[in-house]
Image: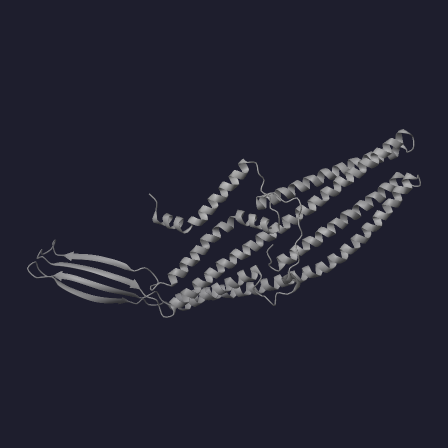
Length: 423
């Protein structure tokens, strides 16, 4: 037998349950068909991660709770009414036929100003639940952005290591050919083989790092990464360099502001609830004194007003005041932290652009040196050790250039994240 609470829950969430069942069916069908789900861009990847996050499912229940509190505050009474029925007779005493029946309908009443305070508090709870949802989506997007660019860096290092191995093998093939005809020494032959082994080890390490990055992305989003990891564009809001124009646009600040509003609303509720709710009751009585007398009916009204406790009121007001003061202090601290983080990222962007320019210049010089050294080695004007040293420097310069380019692209995502912009 199903409980009424379960039936109400199923009725309220029937559309959500239908969506989850449909999504699960589609996923199972895709798995059965051997199809791989791919997140084509950051926005879709963030949506996938949002659907997999355990707290996302609980937010629906919290929003339902907040809406229920809002409905309760809109009622005419703070709590449901009550009915009581009683009967009294003298059957076990004089047994004269005395009989009395009484029925009472009682309902609590709102205190002056309490209903408006409860309604405002319920509204702030709804707003707070929505702001928590937005903040959680923002945090998940930040995790996806970090995994996205970690995967990009791992792919870049794997590609560089593979290219270095191909170059080392080509050089080794040429050296071994020349060694057989006596053009180079055995030391050069061993150096070329050692270079191939070092490149193989670096490629193995890069492939391991890439596999870990791919697994982290799949665990976060439940989807495979795309073949091309696209770069974000710096938004207009990220160019403003300040949160002064839109102080509550950032999801973290909006969540903090919601917490402040909710705490202040609870404080107002505590101020308007200095005593328990009074109770109004309608009493109907039917009675007779003896069996030979007719029944007499009467109707009465009862009002019950509870006393208040000054110590208890001070305690409740102090707790509410402490919560509101803490929420306001946390919001100011968070706003300062977000602003400083944004300013730091803009300074880092300027430094990053200078480092990228230096890396481009160093890469161009290293390529020129490598071409000159390779030509000199072919002509016998330099030894293999010098060529390998210059080749290693060129590889490091190329790796540094690729790292700076990826860091520049990742920094754009960090700036968008710092401004509270979702992918």
